[in-house]
Length: 113
Length: 112
Image (spheres, rainbow over the protein chains, first blue to last red):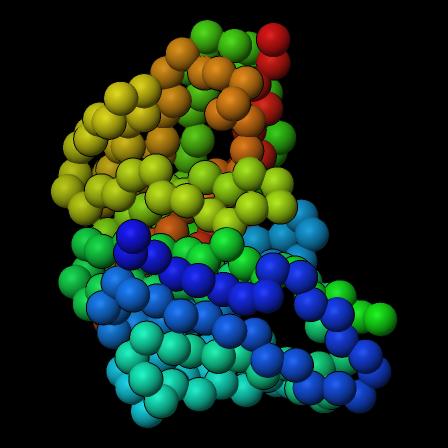
């Protein structure tokens, strides 16, 4: 089945530690996105990529980093510089036509130990 | 002014009634509009999209678009308790070919 796979489902981070969230898609989409969602809040865009080897900062990129070495993969690293990382992280992908929707993965829930 | 605005709710409707969810957007050149449903603790799932003025129906759901008024709505007929969720409006604004802008969502509660 085509879709977006995020792993792990739950992740715990120690103080001062970097952690990486995985996102893989087999929808052949060019564009991929990372969002953060805090309890009771909307989606906030962290980073997005429209093509391999290129990505742009979203609204809240500080403390995060990404790479896009393959079309299928868009991992997100939450660095130790992100002081409040506890949130629900959502990865999405989309085709290039204006009418195409974003498809979301199931999300990763990150907590501080 | 926010780019995409939704009333946060909660919007409470009795079972079997019509729920009407509204969304306004600021970019007059916006091209396409999407409604997502998000259950608590889950990821958003697409319900409908629309890009032409007028109504688009899919089962119990109808999306309505009025570009002149910069307004898009979602009607849910015969509301069920399982429709209780947060509904997100997303807009593909002009000049942002691959980026959607999301509203903060409206929480719908369908009461028995």
